[in-house]
Image (tube, rainbow, N blue to C red; front, side, top):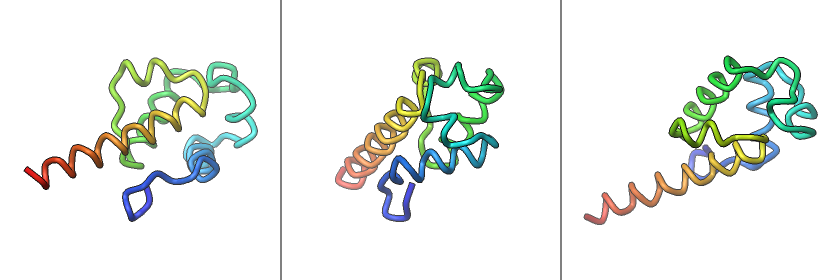
Length: 93
């Protein structure tokens, strides 16, 4: 998440995930996560931690539904949008 609360760009997202998980960006964008060499349940847990650090706390069902890095980015953006909407509603109430 950027300082203004908006999601980072897809490219920045992929670079951050790749760096944190010690993977190549090309590996993440070229195939499904299950087909990325070394991407196992531990890596999925690590991805969850990275998303959490970026401000997106996913439910288990959301995590299980991640097939590609694009799915992860969509879930990240959706989570930030929901968080911003919820915080805005709380501030108004």
